[in-house]
Image (cartoon, rainbow, N blue to C red; front, side):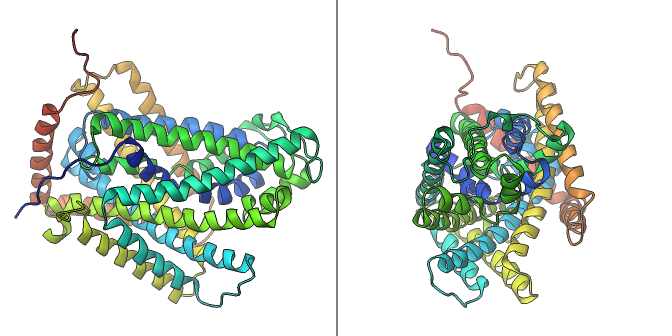
Length: 482
């Protein structure tokens, strides 16, 4: 029996929050600046500004394609409709690996930040980090099984509080540095937007670290079947998620850099900070605000897990509809429309992987960084597939996209190749193993499409039907004569 047709419920801001939640801006800003500072010194804001430009080149492909296609599964449908069913399944399978890896790493992050927050409040927590991670897995599955609006509102509240707290901290830092009342008399130094004492080659290499902060911006594309007016709202949500977080990232990296100070002592302190936002909160506002920031880090990690779970389940649902996996995985709840069975399966898989990591003696931070790296390597492949898809679609003339715009996805593919090369070479163990693990996962997707031709035919038939449905929906880019 087929599922009843869904009523489109989600609005623009609700779709946008899924992408913002998956990126976890509070989490990213607390962790991702230190590595950049250790590499390029005070030029951290410049690195993130250039990183925003690189992400914009990559996001263009998703922005253009979601103006024409709006099925669940994100790149699974986008690449399938533009390049072909085999490419669609390959891209979707790689993206499923990304979301599952992100779910594991954010569950681990929830565990480690929860323990750190309790320790900061004076509460001694002797329980294992995996206990908090497993509780978080149950929580995200339960929340995502409700109406999609529940997930969106939870993400909005959680990340909204974190973003507001960061903006308050940034305002205080800039105010005190501008008036000469900073702890070490740090100054409002605008030279951080130049290469300064490093080279532009080093700055470009460091943009790889910045790029990781945007991983997951495309998550809202998986809500194409649940969002109102998807041809208009999904592209806007994609663009909004990149621009909103991009402005926030550049601002916060500027505030953190001048907050620590642009001299040698400040740069060393920034590069060595385990939680830069908490450290600066204690110095510029007080211990109580550092606790607020610490709590928002826990909440942001949970929100990122919530988004990862939602996106992974919708990918599983889209594939199951075409016969990959048990048919039960394709079912949607008759009331909420949530892929409840797929959500439980994804939650169970992530919980099991998290427990295995703990059982082998891996720490929470190792689990976070290892699975984050695996997820990023897979998502680079996904972004490349989407880039090729928009090139093919433009050349086909079906979408009437001006051919001069091809320079954008081509430049995006070049940047993705640069990022992948940086992530895959010159690393130390165990990071030397991760490109091979990611490649094995992606090759498993290739094996499926090669040895299951019936699956490819089903994907092609469904996409053909979806294209007909798309053609019947109003095109927001079409001009209506007066």
